[in-house]
Length: 158
Image (cartoon, rainbow, N blue to C red; front, side, top):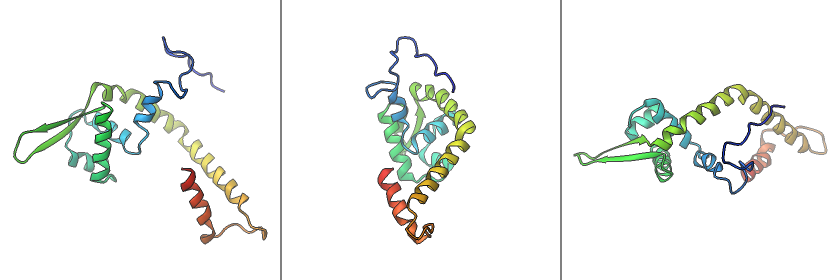
């Protein structure tokens, strides 16, 4: 097993306890789209308008983008710039704190590239064990319609 890194200078060895400030970074980017928006703005290297962000990201609705931008602005990672023009124009740029997050995000990306297949395989094995536990007394695997309780359980747990 790999040895854990030493705590950063000045931090106690309670790096990820419930009251630790290091958890803020994970909580700030815990939403599905927030890290994608930060990374996209960082990759662009310039302010972007919402419509350009939607086009660049792909798969995000304007509503979901707006919610992500508001959360990121609230957390001080994105700056909203409104221009007094006709028609009105708004763009978004990373703050210094948002830009500083790009390095650890790239490290997480490198981790994912190396370990994502292991995580996905583990999830598949776990799901297979759940299905085996749900075998009926006849010993038959659940069919497509019988999978609904498992889906409900995932939603309730997730």
